[in-house]
Image (cartoon, rainbow, N blue to C red; front, side, top):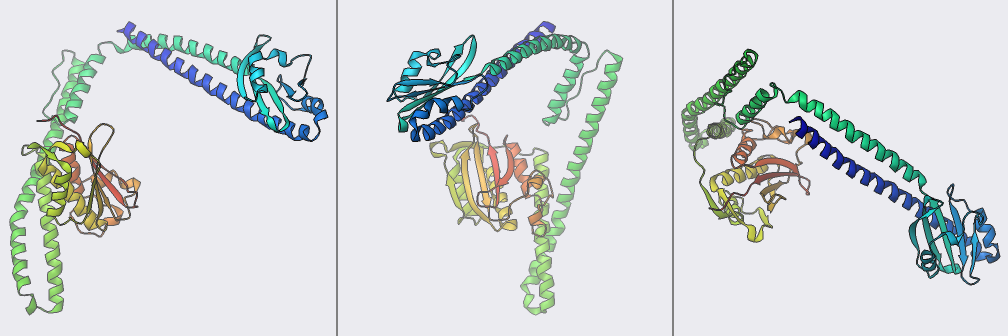
Length: 447
């Protein structure tokens, strides 16, 4: 295990070092090339201006040019076929590759790396057809080579150091403590996935057994509390159904005789009716969440054309005027449970109607993983970034919907149904300025 850990770390460090060195080398050379090209063009423009007005001053112009320390300049006048070197005792056109010089004189500007006296240089050729001349400037890049050498040595030392440290860490971590902790991690992951009845097996070591007992006791306490809360919510919701139904019936009777009431009493009756409907909706949503928490009911997946399904659902619930746009094409057939998609879509449309001035568009698309995206854009002010995670919590309300109707459970139900199909729900900003609610629906294997 120690050898494997050390070799894996060595391979990773080598790969990272190679990538780092390559990226650093490319960056430094590209930067040097860009700088050389920019300075050479600037000097070539100066030469064109001065020599163009007084051709006999070419030698003086080249001598007076400001070049990089250790760099050199050469000017070729085509009509006279003469070369003027900035430092003829140290560098002339003869030090440049003949083919490079010929191409430049023929009018083809370019850049080429050359060696001179064992040191690397960057040669830039700039054709100046306006004055029938060619400007050459050579830049030293020995600093880049020295820097790359330092980087290379540092990376080699780092690879060796990482390998040694990885071996020591591997030796320390592959003891008797790591294996029990791995079992704890596996069980914790299983519990996090919803299997609350999973427990750790007893350990022979007294210290580890104490950890096992504490962990199992904690999980049992969490499971008991969750079950109590689920039963309480379910029981309360069921108990409230009868009085709510009675209240609704009584309100309907009173509304049937609303003409006999005064204006003030009719107003009070309308408020009562609105609150009873809201109360009834909240109880229904709580019952649905209780069923989702208890994982009651079996999914009934079937292959459907999701675009036509979305259009039918929107029309059935009074949202037929909302535009449905799909770019799925031939990829429209999806294996899913119609009831869950219906609940997700209706809740999103109701949410847009109650809190955001209605839905503006329903979009169907796919992401990079091939999952189907069910998107609802609305006409509201949007959802603040700080509220986008919390808005899917139960009884949570966004700033824009503080005074709106609704139970505060609609988006929580959307998130639960999305999780039930293996996907997720989130909110983003719409290009039109409102909110964009997105439900990711993974594709299942065909029936």
